[in-house]
View 1: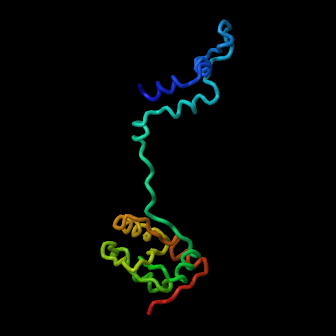
View 2: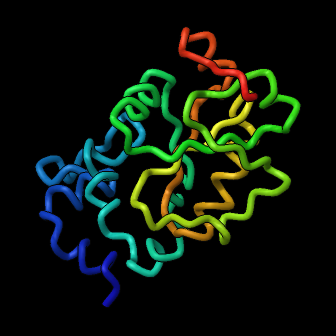
View 3: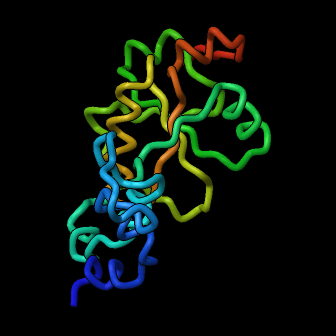
Length: 168
């Protein structure tokens, strides 16, 4: 017996009669309004879907990227538990970097070659957040864990008034 049929057997008789458009107390009278399911009937039936139907619906995947704000990143840098990687071009880096960042341009970014054994959390950034998102997806594919990147990139960092240093 299917779960749907089983649930119909478990519904109280007045609910079944009302769902069919009739009223057990007024069996001989005609209803003037069109028949409709009673309030809550849809909810009662919603739980009766086959488990196989539920299994066929794919669950949304967790995002491999977690954006953090400039303020969050500044606090983490101050705490000293972050490995900050700048994935911008050499020309962009020459204009200034977030203090303490290491530079690995996106075109040379190979997550399989990163030594992640020191236990620091990796945070990526670029100019606006797009390239760091691409690098983050690559890193997440290698590690199997979500990767953090600076929301809005260097533009958001500077807009928030955070410090920038020039590379020698």
